Length: 444
Image (cartoon, rainbow, N blue to C red; front, side, top):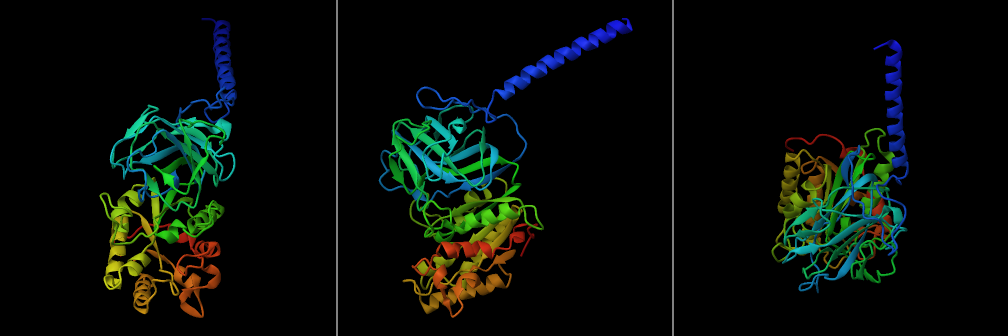
């Protein structure tokens, strides 16, 4: 081959490469960057694209809720023939998403024939942003059967999930499958519609409102904003039962805001925060039934903490219900030993554990001097460093300086047990963010 012919061959190869590259560029440019097209179909439903090619990032939890029991009134039919649109609020954003559905309290298989995810058009709204609507799949299928007592994770779907935003996760089941596994006291309104309206973009059909989250227990994202997840394990105070509905004013929401704002500075880790609070939860005792309604902290640690995505640390705020609900049966030793057992299990998985002191409840209907004495004894052990790796002193931060048995008036929701929005904000403010980072010791 002559040199001239060699140059000609190289030029032809280069031209072919450029032509192929141009075709690829045109194909990518025609996509909206989220894996779907921008035009909705004529029946007001978005395109059904769930393809999720490999992307860079780390899988973390951006939202979660603990399954707490069986929803009353759903024992026979469940939510057959209705679309359930759960509204959840994200912590960190990502380029892909996946969900977890639970049938923990179901007594028969849960048949999901259609599920979707979309970014909400506005806060506290059942309408979706059109070009974010995606159909979810499970092991490649658009239908899935979740056995009674089990849970299932969806396939990853490519969609841009913004940080600090509302996301709509919708499921449809055509057949009876009760009772419904749910999380009450969501402090967030979700919706339901008759028939399969899973990929509706508007809120028109979603005329039913509910204060519960149904079936949905986790939303994970492939994120470039976070490298791990912090799980908050607690009771109604962590659940945010007295916070303003739909405002995301739980202490965990404010903590997540603080972490996002300070991420990467000093000793502040780039972690997301998920809330695993259950109202009425205790360290030791649990509700009736199999599985137990409102399972104890010890019982649910594996599922609600160790089983979450890419967990790096756990914050535990439990113990006050053990004291309030078990007069004469619980003492400081039993409570602190239960807490230590949870810490030991977390350490066995390499997790760092930050623990909270128990806040005062003077003026509450369950208050007594003996119960308050137990609370103060538990707090003494916690402050002495005999329970957790690090301590956040919620008691000191929120108590009335003139009457330490009570919450400060402006931090009190009015029931003398749960904080106001200002009180929840104060809890997050006193959290030392750097305490979430670091290796867990083999033993305390």
